[in-house]
Length: 438
View: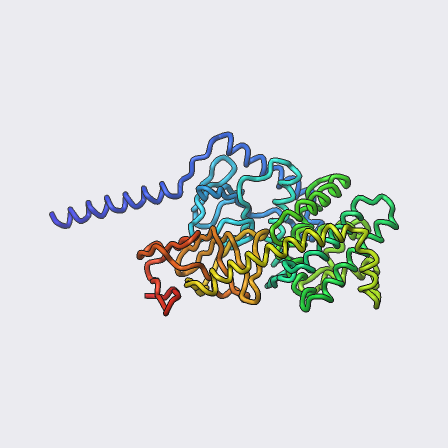
């Protein structure tokens, strides 16, 4: 009798767990939503099938999923290999596991390399195509030779002169885009590259650091814009608008490459639509672009810069940036108190997965970079930040303010919370805190 009771209890338990599993992973999608995403996938596949991998000698279309940031619902064009995604019409749906951060990215999951794109998608067809082909490029990067790309932080682009001379470069590119006279256009491109090279003379290592992001995000955004199915006039308008919008970013440290390489690439593409196939991990894009346009750097570069900078709004740019620089000093002082003088929680990374907003980060001296918004999953749990975290320069740890609420499963502080895994605990060392395995 006792054995029968145990069997009955076991059956009930298994049934309960199975129901919970089904509830957790099942997704209800309306017929109209299914139809909408079926059409998006169909149109994208038809467009890229017609393109036939010409741009990179590689077909871009492949495993693609859209993720709702509110409820982590997945809408995919293919099934996964473990059956988490279930078929709804011609699409597949499921729930993204908590340990995977939601971001526009490429990642390996359930036996496939996927492109992930956050919902909602742009309503404009060309903008949507731009975004999707950008992210699809990231998925094929390892297959076309761009492996182990390590991005280096371009912190000089948060410095006064770094920002001024990046803006001057972009203003020159903007004038080149709106010029109908070939010689004038070439003059503006040349001036843009002179501003760039002057910036490199001001900051040691800037050329190499910028190149790492331009190889990664610059080429991806070039791919997205060139394959956005815009007319030539609309594409130039798009680039001009991108430059204007770029100035609204709080920082340029990680966002500049989304502008520079697409625009330079556009001009090169007018003469050689296969130029990007010459690029590899070892290419310095500045050298390549300068060589393509046969730009010679004058020995008296500073004199040349002083002669041409007024043509691109130097006085207005410098005035704005000086005021901004003064405000930044106040913010840096606040962050120094928060992360250097007050108690903190420092967490070492072991198997880190991270997502963040690249447009509002801020370098903090030689200590690292402050990320106002951040989500990190690791062996110790999930950290969500809404009010600033400090990432070390070599990305081996994250620091947040002092914990104010603590228990075995959840630790919270000013603008952050940590969902702690059961085999980890909070430990205090003098005035500061860290995490340790139990």
